[in-house]
Image (cartoon, rainbow, N blue to C red; front, top):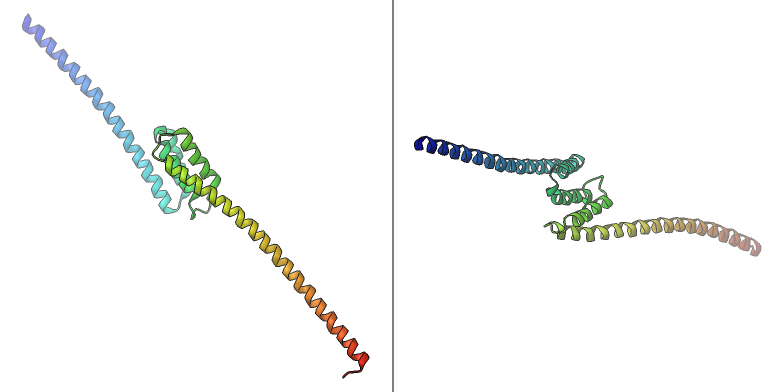
Length: 175
């Protein structure tokens, strides 16, 4: 009976070991599978970006944030960059700032924090320069209108001078 008990113990130990290895293997593989999915999602978003399909790229990053919140810092950083990208016709500096500020707030230890802080500084400068440029353009247009008005006034005054000269010459009878 001792041999039978040892065989049963050996089988139980073998079964337990196999079960443990299977559980570890499955949990380990699911982590690898999830990492693979995230890499593919980031790759897909990058492909959309390179094709100039910024909306699709942004949607993909939003999906990454929803499905893999731990990767949200990188996704937010990429979204902020897309919103600020000069070639993007639908660029939105305020949405870009929101992404970078959210990254800093939600992921204070992120490797993207310093880059986000720099982008916030630069975007604020761009916004200030855009406002200044718009104000200056308005002033230029106003001054151009004033120049036209003064030009018309000068023309009218020149005609009046010519008319007065004509009268003076008529009075003096100078041919």
